Amino acid sequence: MNSTSPETLSVVVEREVAFPPEKVWRALTQPHLIEEWLMKNDFKPVVSHRFQLRADWGTLGCEVVAVEPNRTLSYTWVGLGLESIVTWTLTPTSKGTHLRMEQTGFRQDQRQAYQGARHGWPRFLANLEQVLGRIA
Amino acid sequence: MIFRTLADPTRRAIFEQLCRDGEQTVGALTARAGVSQPAVSKHLGILKEAGLVRDRHQGRRTHYSARPGALAPLLDWTGRMAGYWERRFDDLEDLLRRMDQ
Image (tube, rainbow over all chains, first blue to last red; front, side, top):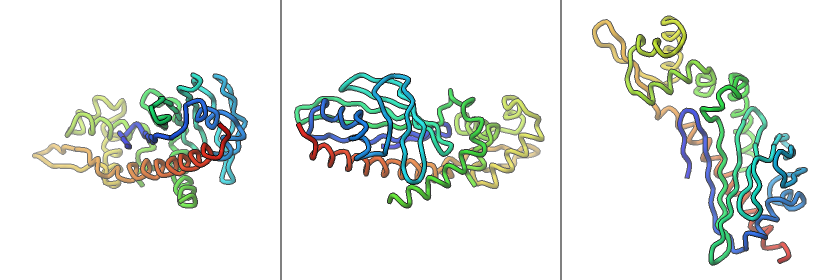
């Protein structure tokens, strides 16, 4: 489920849901619906659209990278020192939709982007531990 | 400790090289690190202190190798992050059940 190398952190979560891709897509892309399962937001399913995800513990700055209605959606997920990309993939099945989420960060080819990581990375991880502890 | 140690790009590069290419001497690491041998030795000392590398003395030479097991906290990080997303999936599924067709 998870893989890691010194340069990459990657998390994959997959699930089959008993609903058609069109319906799942709405939940992933309509702001009032996103708010119900993820965070408050000003999302639009438009490539290059910048938006924020807001929780009581902080704000994530995001930008839409790819939109293919009912099939795939990806956006950057930046905040608290972490730079990563979240990609959703929807595949129709006989029972509904196979939904896959992959979050990947710290890629080798993005090393330049992590010049700030010297300070940001440890701080982010410390913050994240707290946040995840609270969520858990 | 591990995060602070690997936050330095030069140290990260040295550690990555050891993970990728196996045991090496300071000389071999210096040839590719782009910094002086004393600097590489200092970085290796910090990596060793963090438990990320171990050294083996053979004659006058010291060989260094990676201890990837020390990265367990990173694996734990991805485990926790996966847990976060699993709960988001739960909420998403709950929402899908409540939504109009």
